[in-house]
Image (cartoon, rainbow, N blue to C red):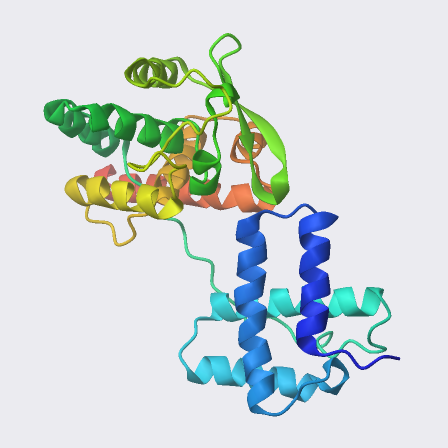
Length: 297
């Protein structure tokens, strides 16, 4: 059996991810970052060959991360990346034994996602209407898709003009794992998007729906800054990322008795268990309302 370096096997795995599995660039970048950290750890201990990695060396890596103050959820993610690497090596007969098979992820208490209420979201619209310039129309369209369609920020950034279908009132979106899904477009969201379409001069359906000042496709970082800026004006929650709008949309749908399977499809979740976290958010909100209002609470 040929003695391959860790970097060589990582390179092969990433090629399979981008080719056969058609993983997104974000996914490939995430695996690269996490696994390069493990490679650097091995290099510091003069472990170059993949076959020299043992269960003990992986446990030492986990201990090292813990001592640096890395959170349990981040350690779990890095271990998941390592599992993928070792499973790839085992499947391709590059190793005879999987050293990570007996190493569990650290137990993580799942936090309930933070949300904003509808009044706070509408207050952002009021602020944008007061501002009233051309950028306000674009920002409103961005926020409308993040909340109205519960998009991930990467999904929003990947949208082209041709993906919006006002006739069928739907949007074609490229989700995680390069999976395409069709998301309903609400009538109020359609009004906002049509207003945005009128403010742009693009006639090419394959052009990015949202661009930056340089005329290039808008970046995740730009969207994050926009959302953070406006959420900070209407709420005091700790986390002010685009995902808060997605969390809020899912929670509000379930609050209004939406079918959980329908919400799962809209969000593009692979597993129902991921969607079920939002049912817990709704229950917690019910408890708070009960404690606040019921005389017997």
